Image (cartoon, rainbow, N blue to C red; front, side, top):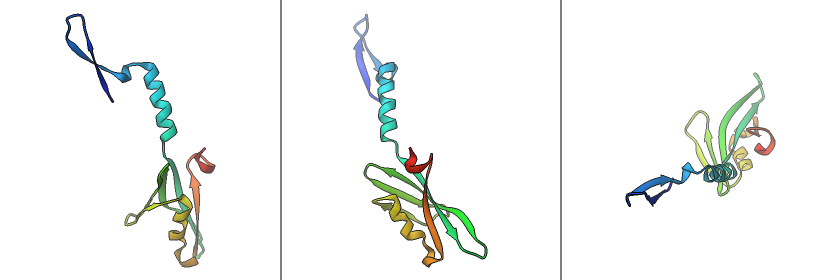
Length: 108
């Protein structure tokens, strides 16, 4: 948040927040919405017994890459795409991982 100094009636400088202007707030909200990361889960299907579906990681995409954090801790990755995370959750071929975007396909 930036502050602007303005002169009041006494010639004193008063700080005025740019966020006091509804137009600025609206523009900033649009900017934040545009820049917000998309969130996804890595869901792993394992074949039994027992067969199981579980969320094994959460990821976040930005314009510069992807961050993935395993649910059980211990693994954090920086990747170029969400799909690259699937390589790490195949469990030697005994599991099938899949990306699920929060809010539906591609997060849109």
